[in-house]
Image (cartoon, helix red, strand yellow):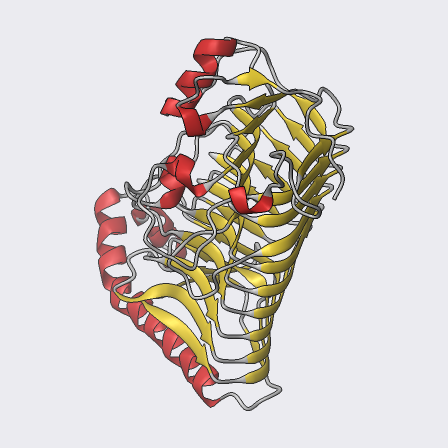
Length: 404
């Protein structure tokens, strides 16, 4: 009497040699299915008529090429859920992004995860009306410079909404909005990135009800030179939980974020018109909040149209806490401040470099340009006097009370 076939299969499947052989036999089938998935959804994106919804199925799908959507209006790309539809680009061979959207209007991306893209996870460029909702980007494994630079990456866009998203493992910024206008980033989480959330050279941004932790820097607000949109401003950062951002900086050498000290909660670089309020900024062990000019980065500056000074900054009603201890950052700024203040580092660091064109004849800020820091719990401030080589670095806890 012959043995039941199912019993033979179960017994043989315990044999490593059988498992290996089965894997080899199934590999062409798997690769064919992966290529079919890629072809199907890239074709849908190419042929989609304005107003279409592209539905992504539940499951984990491996792709080797960028999925791109170009020149479309009112398109939704919708998965079955952040943890249910996973697009893996591990082993990607073609394209610089996982998903790229360009030159569109009213595009919605929702309900899926992009993993291990060769470059940036999801880049959108020149889109008016771009929504990321319930989307996750991540690089699996130990974070390092081999990871892609950006997770969610809208650049030169108008009307940007990032809502209930997650970003993990980016070697530059997990959630990044650059050279854009009219932006909301809310209810989102970022961890194990160099920068958790970054607003760069962007106008009219609201960043609220987010959590950024275990990044090198929690939230960055930067204006940088050599970009198309020269100036950002009118940025409000509020009701966020920014804590334990003490992860070692793993950005590739030469990147501007490679100079962000590990242990940074919030860093404002050369931006004008920033309001930071009602945040919990906790256990960021080097710089709870920094306000610096571009000169403090020690990088060359050739862009004559760029303004390297921060001004019109209002920091109020935040909660600051930190465990006693030396700065975790190994960069020169951390060492300089640590050598003077030891384990009692002030929470707010200001480099002290001001634009002389924004000062009156008495050396005070002209109306509308001053840096105001008031009503923060455990408020402590140091003026670094970076302009004079830190010679007269001193506490300035109650010296930033001017009114704009």
